[in-house]
Length: 317
Image 1: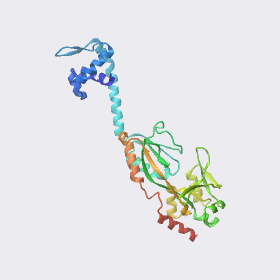
Image 2: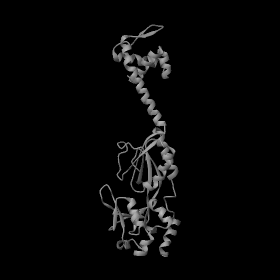
Image 3: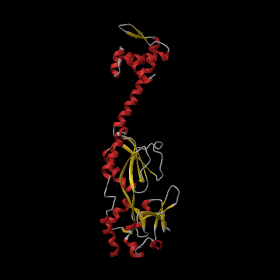
């Protein structure tokens, strides 16, 4: 028995005084309405209506069921209406997850714009380098740095992720400029320490067509990208930074790219989410804005011309 349909048919029949009118309101056939009512009576084991060819009235059992069930059905209808309004309305929580690395510099301006456009939405942002469970974490929109996320999700590549060795001009004037990867061993280098296990992440560099790990003895290490950037800008260390974080400073001359032939660009930043057809409006609008602002963005990727031009500053120091 379809309990919801049977109870709805029963309540509507009482209110409208006619089984055919009840069927019409529900947009089902009279036969389907009659079957639903018959199943309900069979389930209860009692007749709910006295029927004649011209009229129908409630039995004692029918009256008791109507009095008890109507408030519950009304409450259920209200809950369903509220869920529909929430889905189509631009209000409510927006749960976002992503990695600590680069997300603040990349997503911050987009979130600012989104909040101005839809002030009734409450973004809930969790930055975590671990790969969580999409369902258990109740995620609306996720970001992934590296390779595409798990199957079963809609995935969109936003832009390639470059990793560049760079330093402040003041560091190069003080300590000199490394010309090869092996010369980095004699320089003060920074390292990122994974928050999940506390291990120092090796630098990933390109040699020919291969990406290899370059292990360093860090003069400075941290589990926060912002602190690493600060140390590099202060001229204390050479850094290996994600270009979305470093691009602004390279373009303005505060950082100089080094060893650009070893820059890694085989990773990417992805946005992912569940089936678009079932997304609330607040989620759909956020995804649309992210794609509009970030997909194939040149702001967070350095062109060959920009890299070459910035690298020539090494020879003028």
